[in-house]
Length: 483
Image 1: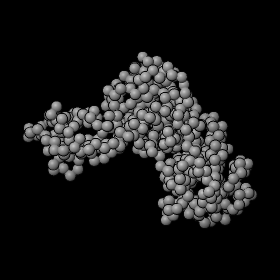
Image 2: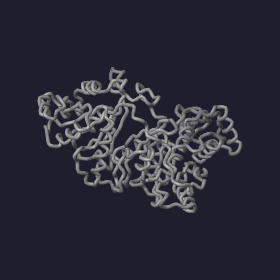
Image 3: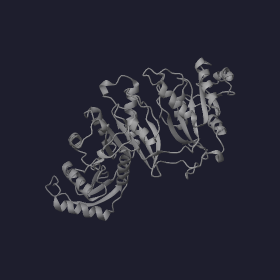
Image 4: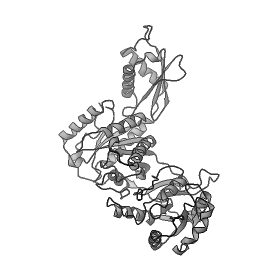
Protein backbone atom coordinates (compact mmCIF):
# COMPACT_ATOMS: atom_id res chain seq x y z
CA UNK A 1 0.00 0.00 0.00
CA UNK A 2 1.27 3.46 -0.90
CA UNK A 3 1.83 5.62 2.12
CA UNK A 4 -0.48 8.58 2.57
CA UNK A 5 1.45 11.61 1.28
CA UNK A 6 -0.48 13.80 3.72
CA UNK A 7 0.75 11.95 6.80
CA UNK A 8 2.03 14.98 8.70
CA UNK A 9 -0.12 16.71 11.31
CA UNK A 10 -1.53 19.19 8.83
CA UNK A 11 -4.82 19.28 10.73
CA UNK A 12 -3.02 21.34 13.35
CA UNK A 13 -1.79 23.90 10.82
CA UNK A 14 -3.76 27.16 10.58
CA UNK A 15 -5.71 27.73 7.39
CA UNK A 16 -3.65 29.54 4.77
CA UNK A 17 -4.63 30.80 1.33
CA UNK A 18 -3.62 28.57 -1.58
CA UNK A 19 -0.39 29.31 -3.41
CA UNK A 20 -1.78 29.11 -6.98
CA UNK A 21 -2.60 32.37 -8.65
CA UNK A 22 -4.75 33.18 -11.65
CA UNK A 23 -3.00 33.56 -14.99
CA UNK A 24 -2.79 37.20 -16.08
CA UNK A 25 -5.01 38.00 -19.02
CA UNK A 26 -2.49 39.21 -21.56
CA UNK A 27 -4.32 37.46 -24.43
CA UNK A 28 -7.24 39.52 -25.86
CA UNK A 29 -10.67 38.24 -24.89
CA UNK A 30 -13.49 38.03 -27.41
CA UNK A 31 -16.71 37.75 -25.41
CA UNK A 32 -19.96 36.47 -26.93
CA UNK A 33 -23.12 37.95 -25.37
CA UNK A 34 -26.83 38.09 -26.14
CA UNK A 35 -30.22 37.21 -24.82
CA UNK A 36 -31.13 33.51 -24.38
CA UNK A 37 -31.56 31.25 -27.42
CA UNK A 38 -29.91 33.41 -30.07
CA UNK A 39 -27.28 30.72 -30.74
CA UNK A 40 -24.33 32.00 -28.71
CA UNK A 41 -23.09 28.52 -27.75
CA UNK A 42 -23.52 27.22 -31.29
CA UNK A 43 -21.52 30.19 -32.57
CA UNK A 44 -18.87 29.54 -29.92
CA UNK A 45 -18.52 25.88 -30.93
CA UNK A 46 -18.47 26.87 -34.59
CA UNK A 47 -15.57 29.28 -34.11
CA UNK A 48 -13.46 26.93 -31.97
CA UNK A 49 -14.44 23.97 -34.17
CA UNK A 50 -15.17 21.76 -31.18
CA UNK A 51 -18.36 20.81 -29.35
CA UNK A 52 -17.45 22.30 -25.99
CA UNK A 53 -20.54 24.32 -25.08
CA UNK A 54 -23.89 22.57 -24.70
CA UNK A 55 -26.24 23.36 -27.58
CA UNK A 56 -29.78 22.92 -26.34
CA UNK A 57 -33.06 24.75 -27.07
CA UNK A 58 -33.70 25.03 -23.33
CA UNK A 59 -33.21 28.65 -22.24
CA UNK A 60 -30.53 29.29 -19.62
CA UNK A 61 -28.44 26.15 -20.20
CA UNK A 62 -25.15 28.08 -20.19
CA UNK A 63 -24.37 29.48 -16.74
CA UNK A 64 -20.61 29.82 -16.41
CA UNK A 65 -18.10 31.50 -18.66
CA UNK A 66 -16.60 29.03 -21.12
CA UNK A 67 -13.15 30.07 -22.35
CA UNK A 68 -11.13 28.54 -25.17
CA UNK A 69 -7.78 29.88 -26.37
CA UNK A 70 -7.63 29.69 -30.14
CA UNK A 71 -5.87 31.11 -33.16
CA UNK A 72 -8.54 32.71 -35.30
CA UNK A 73 -8.71 31.00 -38.66
CA UNK A 74 -6.18 28.39 -37.57
CA UNK A 75 -7.77 25.51 -39.48
CA UNK A 76 -7.93 27.53 -42.70
CA UNK A 77 -5.14 28.75 -44.94
CA UNK A 78 -4.58 31.60 -42.48
CA UNK A 79 -1.81 30.47 -40.12
CA UNK A 80 -1.14 33.99 -38.88
CA UNK A 81 -4.50 34.53 -37.18
CA UNK A 82 -4.64 36.35 -33.87
CA UNK A 83 -4.47 34.44 -30.60
CA UNK A 84 -7.59 35.16 -28.52
CA UNK A 85 -9.52 33.78 -25.60
CA UNK A 86 -13.01 33.18 -26.95
CA UNK A 87 -15.61 33.43 -24.17
CA UNK A 88 -19.16 32.09 -24.18
CA UNK A 89 -21.58 33.52 -21.61
CA UNK A 90 -25.07 32.87 -20.29
CA UNK A 91 -28.13 34.57 -21.71
CA UNK A 92 -28.71 38.10 -20.44
CA UNK A 93 -32.11 38.81 -18.93
CA UNK A 94 -32.87 35.19 -18.07
CA UNK A 95 -34.52 34.49 -14.73
CA UNK A 96 -32.85 31.25 -13.61
CA UNK A 97 -35.34 28.86 -11.96
CA UNK A 98 -32.70 27.67 -9.48
CA UNK A 99 -32.16 31.16 -8.12
CA UNK A 100 -28.75 31.61 -9.78
CA UNK A 101 -29.61 34.69 -11.83
CA UNK A 102 -27.34 36.97 -9.81
CA UNK A 103 -24.37 34.60 -10.11
CA UNK A 104 -24.93 34.13 -13.86
CA UNK A 105 -25.05 37.90 -14.36
CA UNK A 106 -21.85 38.26 -12.35
CA UNK A 107 -20.11 35.79 -14.68
CA UNK A 108 -21.31 37.74 -17.73
CA UNK A 109 -20.10 41.04 -16.28
CA UNK A 110 -16.74 39.52 -15.33
CA UNK A 111 -16.30 38.45 -18.93
CA UNK A 112 -17.32 41.83 -20.30
CA UNK A 113 -14.98 43.65 -17.93
CA UNK A 114 -11.99 41.99 -19.63
CA UNK A 115 -13.33 42.05 -23.20
CA UNK A 116 -11.22 43.42 -26.02
CA UNK A 117 -14.12 42.75 -28.39
CA UNK A 118 -17.78 42.05 -27.61
CA UNK A 119 -19.62 39.87 -30.13
CA UNK A 120 -23.26 40.84 -29.59
CA UNK A 121 -25.44 38.08 -31.08
CA UNK A 122 -29.06 38.60 -32.17
CA UNK A 123 -31.54 36.27 -33.89
CA UNK A 124 -32.30 37.56 -37.39
CA UNK A 125 -35.35 35.30 -37.67
CA UNK A 126 -36.96 36.59 -34.50
CA UNK A 127 -36.16 40.20 -35.32
CA UNK A 128 -35.54 42.94 -32.79
CA UNK A 129 -37.09 42.18 -29.39
CA UNK A 130 -37.02 43.85 -25.99
CA UNK A 131 -34.34 41.41 -24.75
CA UNK A 132 -31.95 42.65 -27.44
CA UNK A 133 -32.43 46.24 -26.30
CA UNK A 134 -31.66 45.20 -22.70
CA UNK A 135 -28.38 43.60 -23.81
CA UNK A 136 -27.53 46.64 -25.92
CA UNK A 137 -28.06 48.99 -22.97
CA UNK A 138 -25.79 46.95 -20.71
CA UNK A 139 -23.06 46.56 -23.32
CA UNK A 140 -23.16 50.25 -24.24
CA UNK A 141 -22.55 51.30 -20.63
CA UNK A 142 -19.29 49.35 -20.55
CA UNK A 143 -17.90 51.00 -23.65
CA UNK A 144 -15.44 49.15 -25.84
CA UNK A 145 -15.72 47.66 -29.30
CA UNK A 146 -18.94 45.82 -30.16
CA UNK A 147 -19.46 43.63 -33.22
CA UNK A 148 -23.14 43.04 -33.93
CA UNK A 149 -23.81 39.57 -35.40
CA UNK A 150 -27.19 38.51 -36.78
CA UNK A 151 -27.19 34.73 -36.32
CA UNK A 152 -29.54 32.14 -37.83
CA UNK A 153 -29.33 33.73 -41.29
CA UNK A 154 -29.40 30.25 -42.78
CA UNK A 155 -30.20 31.56 -46.26
CA UNK A 156 -29.58 34.76 -48.21
CA UNK A 157 -33.27 35.68 -47.93
CA UNK A 158 -32.69 36.50 -44.25
CA UNK A 159 -29.85 38.93 -44.96
CA UNK A 160 -32.27 41.74 -45.82
CA UNK A 161 -33.57 41.70 -42.22
CA UNK A 162 -30.26 42.76 -40.66
CA UNK A 163 -31.39 46.39 -40.80
CA UNK A 164 -34.03 45.61 -38.19
CA UNK A 165 -31.19 45.96 -35.68
CA UNK A 166 -29.82 49.33 -36.85
CA UNK A 167 -31.58 51.10 -33.99
CA UNK A 168 -29.34 49.31 -31.47
CA UNK A 169 -26.59 51.73 -32.48
CA UNK A 170 -23.76 49.31 -33.27
CA UNK A 171 -23.72 49.67 -37.04
CA UNK A 172 -24.86 47.15 -39.61
CA UNK A 173 -25.18 43.61 -38.29
CA UNK A 174 -23.10 40.87 -39.90
CA UNK A 175 -25.38 38.04 -41.08
CA UNK A 176 -24.13 34.57 -40.20
CA UNK A 177 -25.39 31.07 -39.63
CA UNK A 178 -23.49 28.88 -37.21
CA UNK A 179 -25.75 25.96 -38.12
CA UNK A 180 -25.29 26.31 -41.87
CA UNK A 181 -21.70 27.61 -41.56
CA UNK A 182 -22.37 30.82 -43.47
CA UNK A 183 -19.87 33.70 -43.45
CA UNK A 184 -17.39 32.22 -40.98
CA UNK A 185 -14.46 33.86 -42.74
CA UNK A 186 -16.23 37.22 -42.74
CA UNK A 187 -16.94 36.88 -39.01
CA UNK A 188 -13.30 36.05 -38.22
CA UNK A 189 -12.08 38.97 -40.33
CA UNK A 190 -14.50 41.31 -38.56
CA UNK A 191 -13.33 40.15 -35.11
CA UNK A 192 -9.69 40.61 -36.07
CA UNK A 193 -10.42 44.10 -37.38
CA UNK A 194 -11.83 45.02 -33.96
CA UNK A 195 -8.90 43.61 -31.98
CA UNK A 196 -6.36 46.02 -30.49
CA UNK A 197 -2.96 46.29 -32.18
CA UNK A 198 -0.31 43.95 -30.82
CA UNK A 199 1.46 46.84 -29.10
CA UNK A 200 -1.69 47.52 -27.05
CA UNK A 201 -1.90 43.98 -25.65
CA UNK A 202 -0.73 43.55 -22.05
CA UNK A 203 2.70 41.91 -22.20
CA UNK A 204 3.45 42.20 -18.48
CA UNK A 205 4.36 38.53 -18.43
CA UNK A 206 7.25 36.98 -20.29
CA UNK A 207 4.87 34.82 -22.37
CA UNK A 208 4.81 35.75 -26.05
CA UNK A 209 1.19 36.48 -26.93
CA UNK A 210 1.95 35.51 -30.54
CA UNK A 211 2.30 31.90 -29.40
CA UNK A 212 -0.64 29.61 -28.64
CA UNK A 213 0.36 28.89 -25.05
CA UNK A 214 -0.20 25.27 -24.03
CA UNK A 215 -0.61 24.29 -20.39
CA UNK A 216 2.02 21.99 -18.96
CA UNK A 217 -0.57 19.73 -17.33
CA UNK A 218 -4.33 19.26 -17.69
CA UNK A 219 -6.31 18.26 -14.60
CA UNK A 220 -9.81 16.78 -14.87
CA UNK A 221 -11.79 17.38 -11.69
CA UNK A 222 -14.58 14.82 -11.48
CA UNK A 223 -17.02 13.50 -8.92
CA UNK A 224 -20.63 13.36 -7.85
CA UNK A 225 -22.81 16.42 -7.44
CA UNK A 226 -22.00 18.84 -4.62
CA UNK A 227 -18.63 17.39 -3.64
CA UNK A 228 -16.91 20.77 -4.05
CA UNK A 229 -15.30 20.54 -7.48
CA UNK A 230 -16.14 24.10 -8.51
CA UNK A 231 -15.08 25.45 -5.12
CA UNK A 232 -11.72 23.78 -5.66
CA UNK A 233 -11.37 25.38 -9.10
CA UNK A 234 -12.13 28.79 -7.63
CA UNK A 235 -9.43 28.18 -5.02
CA UNK A 236 -6.97 27.50 -7.86
CA UNK A 237 -8.00 30.59 -9.81
CA UNK A 238 -8.32 32.75 -6.67
CA UNK A 239 -11.52 34.24 -8.03
CA UNK A 240 -15.16 33.26 -8.49
CA UNK A 241 -14.32 31.75 -11.84
CA UNK A 242 -17.21 29.27 -11.77
CA UNK A 243 -20.57 29.43 -10.05
CA UNK A 244 -20.88 27.56 -6.77
CA UNK A 245 -24.12 26.91 -4.91
CA UNK A 246 -25.87 24.20 -2.90
CA UNK A 247 -28.10 23.56 -5.92
CA UNK A 248 -27.30 20.12 -7.33
CA UNK A 249 -26.21 20.29 -10.96
CA UNK A 250 -25.13 23.95 -10.89
CA UNK A 251 -22.22 23.24 -13.28
CA UNK A 252 -23.46 22.00 -16.65
CA UNK A 253 -20.55 22.41 -19.04
CA UNK A 254 -16.96 21.26 -18.71
CA UNK A 255 -15.12 24.49 -17.94
CA UNK A 256 -11.44 25.07 -18.69
CA UNK A 257 -9.69 27.34 -16.20
CA UNK A 258 -6.03 28.30 -16.58
CA UNK A 259 -4.00 28.91 -13.45
CA UNK A 260 -0.34 29.32 -12.48
CA UNK A 261 1.68 27.54 -9.81
CA UNK A 262 5.33 28.43 -9.24
CA UNK A 263 5.56 30.07 -12.65
CA UNK A 264 4.04 27.13 -14.55
CA UNK A 265 0.70 27.25 -16.38
CA UNK A 266 -1.82 24.47 -15.84
CA UNK A 267 -5.38 23.80 -16.95
CA UNK A 268 -8.14 22.71 -14.58
CA UNK A 269 -11.19 21.14 -16.21
CA UNK A 270 -14.22 21.55 -13.95
CA UNK A 271 -16.82 18.96 -14.87
CA UNK A 272 -20.54 18.62 -14.16
CA UNK A 273 -21.42 16.50 -11.16
CA UNK A 274 -22.79 13.10 -12.08
CA UNK A 275 -25.89 11.34 -10.86
CA UNK A 276 -26.89 7.68 -11.10
CA UNK A 277 -28.08 6.59 -14.53
CA UNK A 278 -31.60 5.76 -13.34
CA UNK A 279 -31.85 9.24 -11.77
CA UNK A 280 -31.11 11.12 -14.98
CA UNK A 281 -34.14 13.17 -15.95
CA UNK A 282 -33.09 15.30 -18.91
CA UNK A 283 -30.66 15.75 -21.77
CA UNK A 284 -28.55 17.92 -19.45
CA UNK A 285 -27.85 14.87 -17.27
CA UNK A 286 -26.71 13.00 -20.36
CA UNK A 287 -24.48 15.92 -21.38
CA UNK A 288 -22.96 15.93 -17.89
CA UNK A 289 -21.98 12.27 -18.07
CA UNK A 290 -20.62 12.61 -21.59
CA UNK A 291 -18.55 15.69 -20.76
CA UNK A 292 -17.10 14.19 -17.59
CA UNK A 293 -15.93 11.12 -19.51
CA UNK A 294 -14.49 13.24 -22.31
CA UNK A 295 -12.67 15.42 -19.77
CA UNK A 296 -11.07 12.32 -18.28
CA UNK A 297 -9.78 11.36 -21.72
CA UNK A 298 -8.41 14.88 -22.26
CA UNK A 299 -6.64 15.06 -18.92
CA UNK A 300 -3.09 14.21 -17.93
CA UNK A 301 -4.12 13.59 -14.31
CA UNK A 302 -7.59 13.08 -12.81
CA UNK A 303 -8.69 14.36 -9.41
CA UNK A 304 -11.58 12.21 -8.20
CA UNK A 305 -13.48 14.11 -5.52
CA UNK A 306 -15.35 12.60 -2.57
CA UNK A 307 -17.42 14.31 0.13
CA UNK A 308 -15.95 13.39 3.52
CA UNK A 309 -19.45 13.17 5.01
CA UNK A 310 -20.91 10.93 2.28
CA UNK A 311 -20.33 7.24 1.51
CA UNK A 312 -18.83 6.06 -1.77
CA UNK A 313 -21.53 5.21 -4.29
CA UNK A 314 -22.17 3.77 -7.73
CA UNK A 315 -21.38 7.04 -9.48
CA UNK A 316 -17.88 7.06 -7.94
CA UNK A 317 -17.30 3.52 -9.16
CA UNK A 318 -18.54 4.40 -12.63
CA UNK A 319 -16.04 7.26 -12.73
CA UNK A 320 -13.28 4.90 -11.61
CA UNK A 321 -14.19 2.61 -14.51
CA UNK A 322 -13.77 5.52 -16.92
CA UNK A 323 -10.44 6.49 -15.33
CA UNK A 324 -9.14 2.91 -15.52
CA UNK A 325 -10.34 2.51 -19.11
CA UNK A 326 -8.40 5.66 -20.07
CA UNK A 327 -5.33 4.56 -18.02
CA UNK A 328 -5.10 7.95 -16.32
CA UNK A 329 -3.18 8.75 -13.14
CA UNK A 330 -5.61 9.63 -10.35
CA UNK A 331 -5.57 11.35 -6.98
CA UNK A 332 -8.41 10.51 -4.58
CA UNK A 333 -9.42 13.87 -3.07
CA UNK A 334 -11.53 13.74 0.09
CA UNK A 335 -13.04 17.22 0.36
CA UNK A 336 -14.88 19.09 3.16
CA UNK A 337 -12.45 17.62 5.66
CA UNK A 338 -13.09 20.49 8.06
CA UNK A 339 -16.51 18.94 8.69
CA UNK A 340 -15.04 15.54 9.44
CA UNK A 341 -11.51 16.21 10.70
CA UNK A 342 -9.60 13.95 13.01
CA UNK A 343 -6.64 11.59 12.74
CA UNK A 344 -8.65 8.48 13.61
CA UNK A 345 -11.30 9.31 11.03
CA UNK A 346 -8.66 9.95 8.37
CA UNK A 347 -7.21 6.49 8.95
CA UNK A 348 -10.69 5.07 8.63
CA UNK A 349 -11.26 6.93 5.36
CA UNK A 350 -7.97 5.64 3.95
CA UNK A 351 -8.93 2.08 4.81
CA UNK A 352 -12.41 2.68 3.38
CA UNK A 353 -11.00 3.92 0.06
CA UNK A 354 -8.50 1.07 -0.18
CA UNK A 355 -11.23 -1.44 0.52
CA UNK A 356 -13.60 0.03 -2.08
CA UNK A 357 -10.91 0.35 -4.76
CA UNK A 358 -8.70 -2.65 -4.09
CA UNK A 359 -7.14 -2.68 -7.55
CA UNK A 360 -5.71 0.82 -7.01
CA UNK A 361 -3.71 0.71 -3.75
CA UNK A 362 -1.08 2.87 -5.43
CA UNK A 363 -3.33 5.91 -5.96
CA UNK A 364 -2.45 8.83 -3.63
CA UNK A 365 -5.10 10.17 -1.27
CA UNK A 366 -5.54 13.84 -0.32
CA UNK A 367 -7.64 15.34 2.47
CA UNK A 368 -8.57 18.95 1.76
CA UNK A 369 -10.96 21.80 2.50
CA UNK A 370 -11.46 23.53 -0.84
CA UNK A 371 -13.59 26.27 0.69
CA UNK A 372 -10.61 27.63 2.65
CA UNK A 373 -7.92 26.53 0.20
CA UNK A 374 -6.46 24.11 2.75
CA UNK A 375 -4.04 21.61 1.16
CA UNK A 376 -4.98 22.74 -2.37
CA UNK A 377 -1.34 23.45 -3.27
CA UNK A 378 -0.28 19.99 -2.09
CA UNK A 379 -2.88 18.37 -4.33
CA UNK A 380 -1.34 20.18 -7.31
CA UNK A 381 2.15 19.11 -6.20
CA UNK A 382 0.97 15.49 -6.02
CA UNK A 383 -0.63 15.75 -9.46
CA UNK A 384 2.65 17.10 -10.86
CA UNK A 385 4.47 14.12 -9.35
CA UNK A 386 2.09 11.71 -11.07
CA UNK A 387 2.40 13.67 -14.30
CA UNK A 388 6.19 13.24 -14.23
CA UNK A 389 5.93 9.56 -13.34
CA UNK A 390 3.56 8.81 -16.21
CA UNK A 391 5.99 10.42 -18.67
CA UNK A 392 9.12 8.73 -17.39
CA UNK A 393 11.00 6.22 -19.51
CA UNK A 394 13.04 3.27 -18.28
CA UNK A 395 15.97 1.98 -20.38
CA UNK A 396 15.47 -1.42 -21.97
CA UNK A 397 18.51 -2.85 -20.17
CA UNK A 398 17.09 -1.88 -16.79
CA UNK A 399 13.65 -3.30 -17.64
CA UNK A 400 15.21 -6.61 -18.60
CA UNK A 401 17.13 -6.74 -15.32
CA UNK A 402 13.87 -6.22 -13.44
CA UNK A 403 12.00 -8.88 -15.43
CA UNK A 404 14.84 -11.42 -15.11
CA UNK A 405 14.82 -11.01 -11.35
CA UNK A 406 11.04 -11.32 -11.28
CA UNK A 407 11.20 -14.57 -13.24
CA UNK A 408 13.85 -15.96 -10.90
CA UNK A 409 11.69 -15.12 -7.90
CA UNK A 410 8.50 -16.48 -9.41
CA UNK A 411 8.55 -18.68 -12.51
CA UNK A 412 6.06 -17.97 -15.31
CA UNK A 413 3.21 -20.44 -15.91
CA UNK A 414 3.54 -23.27 -18.42
CA UNK A 415 2.09 -23.26 -21.93
CA UNK A 416 -0.48 -25.81 -23.14
CA UNK A 417 2.30 -28.33 -23.82
CA UNK A 418 3.52 -28.07 -20.25
CA UNK A 419 6.64 -26.09 -21.06
CA UNK A 420 7.50 -22.97 -19.02
CA UNK A 421 6.83 -19.74 -20.86
CA UNK A 422 10.02 -18.00 -21.87
CA UNK A 423 10.26 -14.20 -21.61
CA UNK A 424 12.75 -13.03 -24.22
CA UNK A 425 12.91 -9.32 -23.50
CA UNK A 426 11.01 -6.28 -22.22
CA UNK A 427 10.94 -2.75 -23.59
CA UNK A 428 8.96 0.42 -22.97
CA UNK A 429 7.02 1.31 -26.09
CA UNK A 430 5.00 4.30 -24.83
CA UNK A 431 4.65 6.76 -21.99
CA UNK A 432 1.56 8.45 -20.52
CA UNK A 433 0.56 5.78 -19.70
CA UNK A 434 3.84 3.88 -19.40
CA UNK A 435 3.45 0.81 -21.61
CA UNK A 436 5.83 -2.14 -21.29
CA UNK A 437 5.91 -4.79 -23.98
CA UNK A 438 7.07 -8.33 -23.24
CA UNK A 439 8.17 -10.66 -25.99
CA UNK A 440 7.37 -14.22 -24.88
CA UNK A 441 7.22 -17.71 -26.26
CA UNK A 442 3.45 -18.15 -25.74
CA UNK A 443 1.36 -15.05 -24.96
CA UNK A 444 -1.93 -16.84 -24.08
CA UNK A 445 -0.16 -18.80 -21.33
CA UNK A 446 0.86 -15.64 -19.46
CA UNK A 447 -2.08 -15.59 -17.06
CA UNK A 448 -3.71 -12.47 -15.63
CA UNK A 449 -2.43 -13.24 -12.10
CA UNK A 450 1.13 -13.47 -13.43
CA UNK A 451 0.71 -10.25 -15.36
CA UNK A 452 -0.48 -8.52 -12.18
CA UNK A 453 2.57 -9.92 -10.41
CA UNK A 454 4.89 -8.48 -13.07
CA UNK A 455 3.12 -5.09 -12.94
CA UNK A 456 3.56 -4.99 -9.16
CA UNK A 457 7.25 -5.79 -9.55
CA UNK A 458 7.61 -3.07 -12.16
CA UNK A 459 5.78 -0.60 -9.93
CA UNK A 460 8.24 -1.16 -7.09
CA UNK A 461 11.36 -1.05 -9.25
CA UNK A 462 10.57 1.82 -11.64
CA UNK A 463 9.40 5.45 -11.34
CA UNK A 464 5.82 4.29 -12.04
CA UNK A 465 4.91 3.83 -8.38
CA UNK A 466 1.63 5.76 -8.36
CA UNK A 467 0.38 5.58 -11.95
CA UNK A 468 -1.25 2.94 -14.15
CA UNK A 469 1.08 0.61 -16.05
CA UNK A 470 0.04 -1.13 -19.26
CA UNK A 471 1.65 -4.51 -19.82
CA UNK A 472 1.54 -5.69 -23.44
CA UNK A 473 2.43 -9.34 -24.08
CA UNK A 474 3.43 -10.47 -27.55
CA UNK A 475 4.05 -14.05 -28.56
CA UNK A 476 6.70 -15.02 -31.06
CA UNK A 477 4.07 -15.56 -33.78
CA UNK A 478 1.81 -12.63 -32.77
CA UNK A 479 1.38 -9.64 -35.04
CA UNK A 480 -0.22 -7.58 -32.29
CA UNK A 481 0.61 -7.41 -28.58
CA UNK A 482 -2.05 -8.53 -26.13
CA UNK A 483 -2.61 -6.44 -23.02
